[in-house]
Length: 464
Ligand SMILES: NC(=O)c1ccc[n+]([C@@H]2O[C@H](COP(=O)([O-])OP(=O)(O)OC[C@H]3O[C@@H](n4cnc5c(N)ncnc54)[C@H](O)[C@@H]3O)[C@@H](O)[C@H]2O)c1
Ligand SMILES: O=P(O)(O)OC[C@@H](O)[C@@H](O)[C@H](O)[C@H](O)CO
Image 1 (cartoon, rainbow, N blue to C red):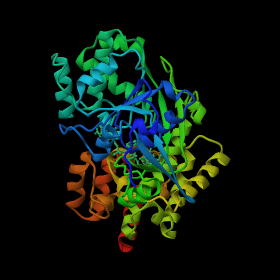
Image 2: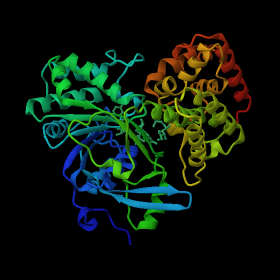
Image 3: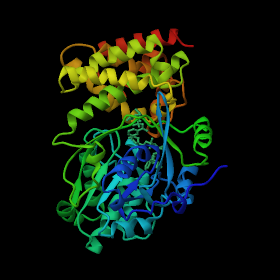
Image 4: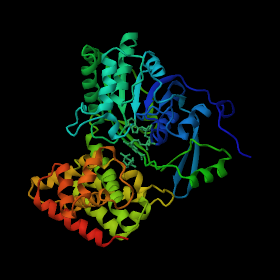
């Protein structure tokens, strides 16, 4: 007999809300909410979850509706090679609609709320290629103009505008210190969030900057747990296992890592009790993860579909893709400032994670938003080698794959910032497409162009 999740049956009351999360998608439910659930002081730290998308639609997915219907409860299916381990997670105390600005302001004005976390994708922070707030983004400007002209009860839709709206409410309420903990795969994400929030505040009301100096902390984090999209097959199997029909089900791998650096102005849950590490400098850990895990993910996402492959598991089990991944790692490790033994161990652990046969991680998920990802995961290797007069032939491969992807090979291009580039790469031959992509990546090097072209031609010839 199937049952539906609710707190009365589950027996776990909602903890007081002290964290607001923007972008309550799959990843944060597998990672931050799981860490908070298992922290030694979990009964003190509830999360308020808001979906983040910039849309007028009140809801973005049935998964979000499930949080309301199930009083914040959902199942997490941890897919170990030997079988499923399913937990009910209860750390999300309340869920809201993405445009519910009134609840957003009320929470920011509450002195009990002391942390703001976010997973709104790389694109959600509205940055330009230089890493500054993109004042050419019309949706962002419309939001900021609303705030600047005092229309404070109107909904705003972009991440930076929501953050500034929240801080205005907090200052007005005298609610004290608060700390931002962005959890997206962006290097030095604390500094990145601080930059866009300060620039948005400056646009709206420059007097907020001084208040931010005194009251707002920004923490940089490296987050890691592979969290694929939940499939219908996952939902059916877990319903069979637990007897719970759960439209909010999230699936993930057993591995989880969280490294944080920076000052929490007003405390944080005891995430260390679950294995989170607080360090002085998170950058080497970020480079390890972003370059080796995310970089090879991007390589597989763009190159493996050429061979007709659809998941990370299928890709890494193909000897050609495995060879490309190893060649990429040989180049990328050189930019990771950690001891060799540590890097070798990380590579071995990654291979074990990618070959988990239970995980059906779709390459199409990873392929999204390449314009945001290639510059931070791949380009640093090309530039470091070029500075030494060399071509990083392992790191040119994902660029060659991306050219083919943009030209229509594999999953459809899902990247709001790529439309002009897509038109350009589809309007000429492969050689001109390679040059258009390298111009976009700000790489002006004929040796790199020749290598990318020859690898793209080689892969086109292998096309399934
Ligand atoms: N899935 C993973 O394995 C994983 C692991 C580590 C880090 N992350 C980080 O988490 C992010 C989200 O991944 P997910 O798996 O939760 O995805 P998801 O699609 O399940 O959720 C994404 C959330 O971000 C919101 N969003 C999307 N685009 C936005 C935009 N432009 N502005 C504001 N909000 C926006 C969505 O509404 C949703 O709430 C990734 O982009 C990545 O930076 C993911
Ligand atoms: O989440 P994205 O879109 O930034 O990148 C896709 C994957 O590389 C990523 O989600 C990994 O699965 C994750 O970073 C593992 O911790």
